[in-house]
Length: 111
Image (cartoon, rainbow, N blue to C red):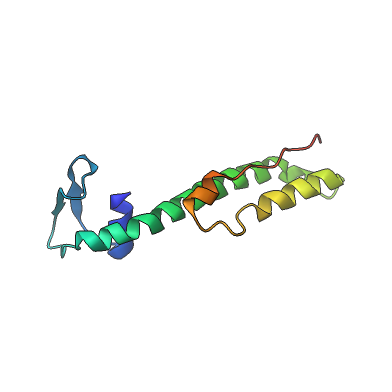
């Protein structure tokens, strides 16, 4: 998480972190050190972004499993249309990690 926070501030930063300890960052290759308070301020933002990214990936995989039902020679049931719309709407209003962790995926209907 610390690494992502640092790269959010300075994508070109070069550093090592010992034991994932924010107090044990070694700045490399003339990288200007970033104050710890600035890194710590980015961590909640990075946590939210990574949580949303993981949720979207899972959602996208579930949508991909039913994409074939949208082919012109198949008729998608109303239940499947609703399921797919619920998946697409899943991320609406998710502005905290807690809300993301509380998401319940809809149940896939029979095809």
